[in-house]
Image (tube, rainbow over all chains, first blue to last red; front, top):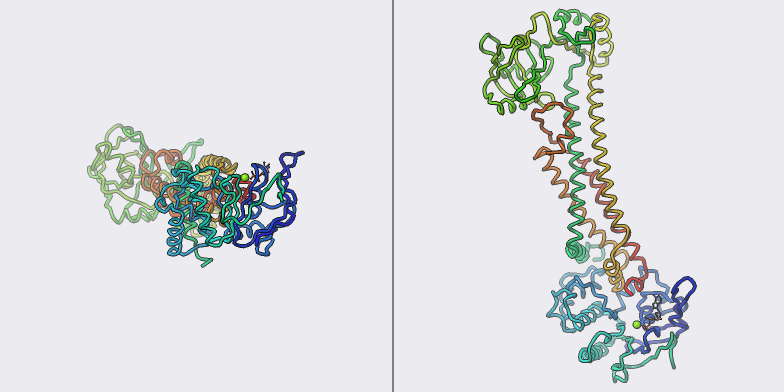
Length: 223
Length: 395
Ligand SMILES: Nc1ncnc2c1ncn2[C@@H]1O[C@H](COP(=O)(O)OP(=O)(O)O)[C@@H](O)[C@H]1O
Ligand SMILES: [Mg+2]
């Protein structure tokens, strides 16, 4: 279970100017739930995702995941938390362009100092599941947008996280690939992951397997 | 399992070095050049130092020269008897020797006369006396030459003998009986050993005279006392002790080590410029990569470990190459170019071999001056980025 309690995030734009990205938000997401955060650009969706992934810290309030106050974690434990719980599909994918598909998917496993036999099997399975195994030795910078996204999905899934987060997953895809992504999402949902999607793409609205749609407006949740 | 070496992390580091082909190539080249220069200078210094030390150790304890109006003259052989009377003196030998200028090659040979049945004032001469017969007679004289002399002779078409020009302009033919190879290269390289009679003939020195007298003292502590006593007995002499010589040798050497130091500082300076350049910041791609690694669950420790491997691989590789090149350059190729700068003091143009002196300390010093500094210079900026909030770095 993910709980956001009275969360505010205030950015210092410059010395005299502050920007309230999130304003005293309260939100609870159940285990296995698929939630779509929607709202205009700049409303604060990405900020929420990054707080849940412990990639940044709230100015006020607490983020609690499985009764752990992850917003209070020191940097080292925040990394461990991400490693063990979070799969993040970034809007810009955040892949390493000069590494191969396989090496990119491997990244989250490296700190675990894994056993070689297990790694190869795991990588192969994940790449097959997300239909990118045939490109495993190709450098990511030579892939199309859709292929890069599949690598990003495979990477987010490889450490078998409880929570999968996707930020504007269809922003860089055409309609056909977007629909394809939605099919993959359905599959992830069947695997009983907690899934949080931030998007303003209408394709995600009123999908049968989406549990909840939450609308964000100017850093606040609309009822 | 947790404490085992993380092969994937090392693989990632190797991959990182290979991915940045041009950058890695540049760093390895510069780094290698610097370790090469530093190591070469140290190697040459060590060799010369070693050479000087063994030369100084082989010097006579006391040399007595005759001085008139500040000028060096041949000394009376009879002075030996007086010196032998002095308490503490165990031996005194009149030497006949001198420099011979060989015009064709433009080099000086030092000619040393020895007597077959006399006690030799240098250990290395004992073996020459044992090995070669230097008997003197009118038309058949023999000599034993140093390696450098031999080379020079070969280059000037003297294969088996040499014609010395005597003061009166006539020639003295001396046959080459052999080539010696003493433990101190510096001194013996330009040396020719022949019998005293032959030498007297070449330089026209009468039987009653000698170039100087070398004195051996029983107890090395008494060298100064004995030296003063000789001076009292023969006021028209100059007394040179091995301590005096040691000092003047070292003066020459210290002057040279100034040059070494300059070179050393220059290369160190260059090195720090690179370090400075590196520590002034990472490229945006490098920063982003660190941010991505953190975002997918790497801790700061993981990132720094990887950076450590990366910089260790690159710097240790370059260090090994540099040292390997220096070894080959100094000892195999005898340090062309640099060698002329450093060996210039010997004033001989004859061949001079840099002896191989393996000194682990030198290698360790160069290692300390390069590898850890480079690793620190790589890790510190990475550490700065890795401790930032990941969200800021990858946004
Ligand atoms: N690092 C930052 N510094 C300053 N302002 C930021 C930063 N990150 C986000 N913002 C601002 O916070 C607000 C919310 O941003 P974001 O969460 O990215 O919105 P969304 O994802 O819904 O488009 C925006 O106005 C954005 O400009
Ligand atoms: Mg956004």
